[in-house]
Amino acid sequence: MCWNTSSAFTPVALALRGPATRKIVRTLGDAAYLLINDWPSDDGEEYVAAVKACVDAISGKIAPERFREALLRAADEAGIAALTVVQPGIGDRRPDLHSGAPR
Image (cartoon, rainbow, N blue to C red; front, top):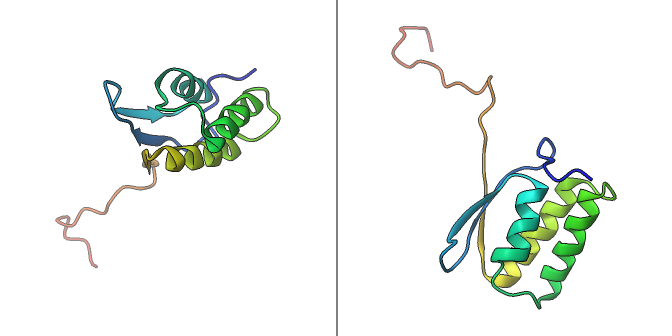
């Protein structure tokens, strides 16, 4: 089992209600904990599908990104706002506008 798979999992930020208001899900382990402990409702069809997809991703039966899609559907069903967390790469630097370089 691969609980902390993150290389193929695009992080997602979720805005929950209550004491655990904002969570960033970076790994399958993060997602499993969130679904079991912090999810506002455990009876939605998409929620159940997301739990199953999480187990399948952890056991290697599906890709982590397929699970992420199920998580986003469950969040939508529960009225939870979700944002993709963009992580800048090494080559993503902005050009220096004050360097005097030609435009």
